[in-house]
Amino acid sequence: MKKGIHPDYNYVVYKDISADFSFLTRSTATSNETIKWEDGNEYPLIKVELSSASHPFFTGKQKLVDSAGRVEKFMKKYNRK
Image (cartoon, rainbow, N blue to C red; front, side, top):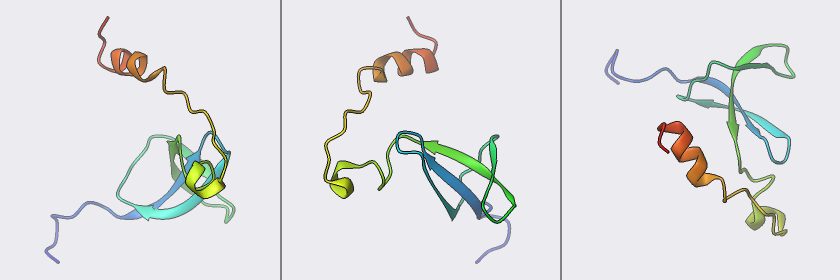
């Protein structure tokens, strides 16, 4: 691989906020938030709404996800009224 053209590839913790499930993996994603993991080290924290712990395909249960707030989240993100 060429040097200097690829993003950093580091350990990151992904946390499913709806199922309170976390897992450690490697990714190019970054975050300002950190979390102390089971091994005692601190890693960047990425919060997600769905993972295999909460997705109906993997759990076999239908779970209502907040989809009514999508427009409001978009408007808030882009400061629109």
